[in-house]
Image (cartoon, rainbow, N blue to C red; front, side, top):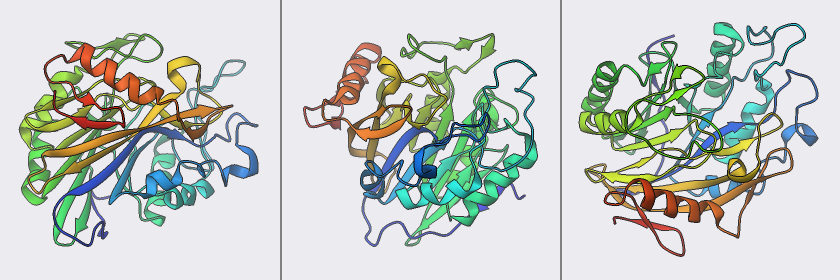
Amino acid sequence: MTSVLLVAMVLAQDGGTLRLRAVGDMMLGTSVPEGVLPPDDGKRLLDDVAPLLQDADVTFANFEGPLCDSGTSAKCRKGGNCFAFRTPTRYAPYFKAAGIDLGSTANNHSGDFGEACRRETEAALDGQGIVWSGPPGSIGSTTVKGKKVALIAFHTSGATNDVNDLPTAKKLVTQAAATHDLVIVSFHGGAEGLGADRVKDGAEKYLGENRGDLKTFAHGVIDAGADVVIGHGPHLLRAMELYQGHLIAYSLGNFATYGRFSLGGALGVSVILEVELGDDGRFVTGRVLSTKQEGKGVPMRDDTKRGQKAIAELSARDFPKTGVKVSDDGVLSAR
């Protein structure tokens, strides 16, 4: 596998802004353990939200777990709980049909079934023309009518581009910025679960692991040339801020996580983020579209706008000077 993945893809027919939509964690069911695949084998799982994902020049998601059909997991012990995911490769077309163009494979579940399963995941995404980034040194690349767009995905692990190795991360972003017009950075980090909605100063710890100094990381990669930073990992929404004219979304939460996730309260609330980037990569405008998960994890539009309200409150709380303002119709602007 080469360290740089180049895939040509036309995203827009006109110049000017690029309209990106992005969501957090997606895991459409798992074959391990048995009985955790969605009804109708997942064919209609994304029907309600697909039109929103398709309505963009390019759409990003985090693939929370691999796409493969075999292998065993070190996370599965005899007689114990097996919190490992393995979504069948036949589900890969569902992501593409729903509108996903870019994806992160850098997270704490991407290696659940080993390196062979990672390679199978990459092959499944390649087969759908979905551009990915995750392994160390990997950069996903697309071409927009002569304009090149890079994706670099990070996690708090040496098996991926590493959030906790900021010097290397900045070098990778600088490398991408030298050969691309726009650079999108994704990270999977931070503490998890209810009560983990705060963006804190310094490194976050979870179950004894260093889950990243996310403010320092996000600001650092923007200083190195990133144009927008998209976070996920805590399994709930976090604040958004504007730094040097660039948007940082610290967590987009659980978007479509069927069967194995706790989805009570804030854990079942999410948004679809829309960002328009100018030719210089700076934030032009944006908005959030509220979604929720029903039942075991079916993503639906949320007319009560809980996600939008959460982003407004969290951003004002954690970033009183730089946090985004959110209008009544979900439009984002500088404070």
